[in-house]
Each structure stands twice: as C-alpha cells, then as structure tokens.
Length: 177
Image (cartoon, rainbow, N blue to C red; front, side, top):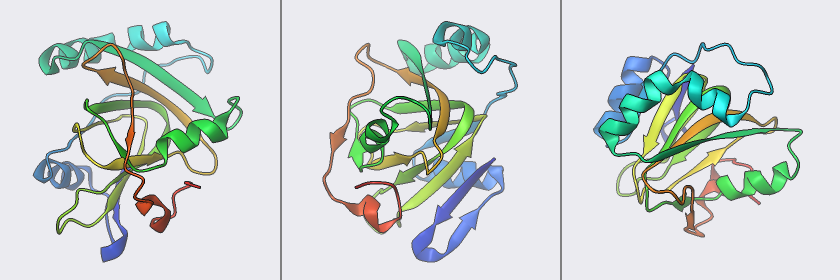
C-alpha cells in the first residue's frame, strides 16, 4: 500500500498509477516491486539481498548503483530513539536515496520548495522510491517502528545526511524533537 498525503491541500492520493504520475512529474522515481519473498523474521542482510537479487541487479546496473545494504529496525532495536532522530529531521544527500521496502512501513516527507506543497508518501512492503540527490526530505518511522528496507547507493560510503536545520518537519507532526 502507498498513499500520498498533501496536508496543506487536505488531499490524498491512493491509486498507485496516480501516485507514480505525481512523483514522475516531480522527478522522483516511485514504483511497486514484488516483496512476496518468504523470509524468516530474523533473516540477515546477505539472505535478504540474495532473495531480491533478481530485481536489484538489473536496477543497479541500469542506474549505476554500486552497493546495497539492508536496514532492519523495530521498536525493540537498541537505541531506536536515536536512530529515529537521524532520519526524521529534514535533510538532503549528495547521492540519490533509494529504498525498497521489503517489510514494515514508514513515511517519506518531501519539501521540494517553490510553489510545491510539502507532501508525504506512506509506504509499506513492495514500494521502491528514489529520492533524488539534494532533495529536501525526511523519513518518519512512526510510533511503532518497523522497517526492513534495502538501501541502494552509487558510492561505497552509503547514507550521509546534510541537515537543513529548518525545523519544517515539526509542522507536519513527525517525531522530530
């Protein structure tokens, strides 16, 4: 399931073809992949990456991506509050932020600037999204975090945030403190 929420317009979009159109018009890649691979709850990174290699390999080759890893967090993850705060404050990256949700859920928020209203995408298993480099955004895991996602990068360093310190995420009810 995926749902776009545009709070300042009191608008939602839940039909996936319309979600893809909305993102495509804004230069953001969003699609649905099959996330139906049966994995054990405690499946590790290597097992998860191998299970989705059939989709990852051609996607990574086409996009020039060099590495992938898996992030698995839930409400029982040690230091979860600190982890949540890393993602829930508006930031940018010098690399695209590509995520394929294997299990769980979360909300990507976007602040594209100009006349574009702030909007979010609730996504769960099967959604793949690529936030373009230098795009202002944040990710909210919610009150009951559960995220199992494959992260895909063009560089070996992986995830590095450049925080904007705007505080805009607080206006939209995210968990930022």
